[in-house]
Length: 129
Image (cartoon, rainbow, N blue to C red; front, side):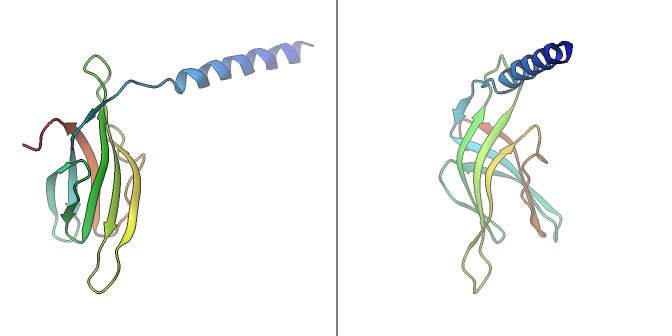
């Protein structure tokens, strides 16, 4: 009987932790994503400003940001963007190499895997200036 009680207690604790972990952090949308791009061949690092839904070319990559969200000022700072990244090589059709969320505070959590380019989100802002 004690084992059953311990199991019930442990299950309850895990369920409460799970529901706390899934609590949504309120976010605010911004019209421009700020990305950092690295060309590993030339060692060129660039800050790339990408307005939402406006494709931007970096080397052979075409980057489209669908949304960029930040936490409100009273929360822990965080920025996240949902990206589509395709590669267009000469004489070939474009191939999607990344589609998903990238987080400024955890770039390795959802990283783009590419032999020549690295790309990560550094923030979101209100204008392209």
